[in-house]
Every structure is written in C-alpha cells, then in structure tokens.
Image 1 (tube, rainbow, N blue to C red):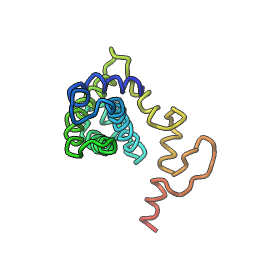
Image 2: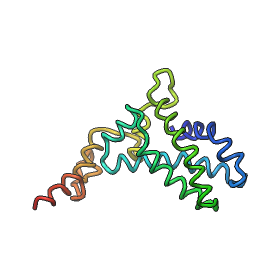
Image 3: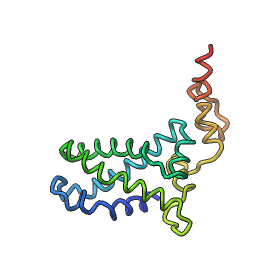
Length: 167
C-alpha cells in the first residue's frame, strides 16, 4: 500500500517537486516520501483519535478536506525540515496534497482498480500488526490497545475519559 501511494505521489508531483527550483534535486525523493508519509500520518491521526466514522466517511463520500488539511500541514513541516523555504513548502503542499488525496480515495473506491482497497488502507494505518479488527476498535474506546491479548486497559480510552466527566 505504501509503495502504491508513493507511486501515486510520484506520478503527480512532476511540476510541484521535480521541476521546482525551490526543491533541490537531491531532495526530490525525500520530498516525495514526505508527501506520502504525511498522508499516512494524517489518516493514522484520524484513526487514533477515535474518529472512525470520519475516516470511513472520508473514503465513502470523497470529502477529503479534514485529511487534506492535516496532511498538508505535516507535509509543509517535513519540507521545511528539508531546508525548503516555508512559503514554498506551503505552496507545494497546497498544490499537490488535495489532488493526490482525491485520486487516492477515488482509486480506493474504484472496483476496477486494485492498487488500493479500503481494508488494506485501514489495516496499514491501524498498527504494526497490519490488522484491523473489532478488538482494535474496542481498544480505542477502552484504552486497551491489546484487547485481544486479554491485557487490562490503562484507563485512557474514550469510555474512561467520558466517565471522568460524570464523576
């Protein structure tokens, strides 16, 4: 999935990164990796914050604005970390992240395109085990990241936080 996303980014950044005098040629690969990494980071953040419905809606409806905003911000920071002027970094992010996210979501929803599928995307962003199942969702709500392993929650889940509001 990461390689397919990186390929999608590579196919769509010729003018914004490769042909851009603000991005040194030796930084092209790092900038391309930063773009795909920023998209993955934004999706992971959405999932880890418990906004599962929002994540599903992003892929079902194609409304990518919340992910685009976060991915663009992360990408801008990564480009600035590569020594690219902040204003240039913002312009590069604004010129490529929305289009790439839209294409990414469209490819995920296209039954004739097997380069991405929703289950693989969720599986990748869900965690190091590469699996996403009910115990992952349960863990987000209870704070028990290893629910399937039978370990006790740590009191930092959504339900525990909600309980604190009423005590």
